[in-house]
Image (cartoon, rainbow, N blue to C red; front, side, top):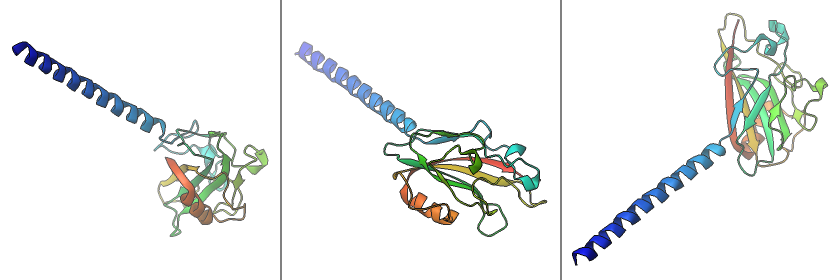
Amino acid sequence: MGILAMHFGFCRLACCKLAKGLVASALLLVAVISHAGQLTLSSSSLSPGQKMPLAHVYGGCGGENLSPQLSWKGAPEGTKSYAVMVYDPDAPTGSGWWHWVVFNIPADTTSLPEGAGDLKNGLIPEAIQVSNDYGSLGYGGACPPKGHGDHRYRFRVFALKVESLPLDENASPAKVGFHVNANKLAEAELEVLWGH
């Protein structure tokens, strides 16, 4: 009887350890999948939380007005296109300032080279770029009012569930934003600063 009780006790202990091992493995798998599916945005031109290099500042503020290099990874399953939107929430307009809005970026594109925001370069021919708040198509760099301190410039990439938005280059950034948010699967942000 004592041997039988010991046998059952051993089995119960072994099963308990096996169950704990399976639970731990399952949790690790979930963590890996979650991490793999998290959209992230990075740049070889910009450092998060740091000052934007002068090359990416608007010409009227002494810069070269060159759009920065951007890369992203970890898009969720079902991503069919991307959009990139750059916004200054600190502009003294009551509604911020749109610096760059581009959409219908193909799903197999995971980076934009430096200068892609200049339509003359033709670096992303499939995509559509609308007018920024300077009134020109493509990228418009940072140029806050003098004495206004550092502004935040939010570079965002959106993974979308549609191949294209039903818009053209005449759409306003707000209208693009409406369609982007209605179709987004994930988004990632990189924020930099600039001020006089």
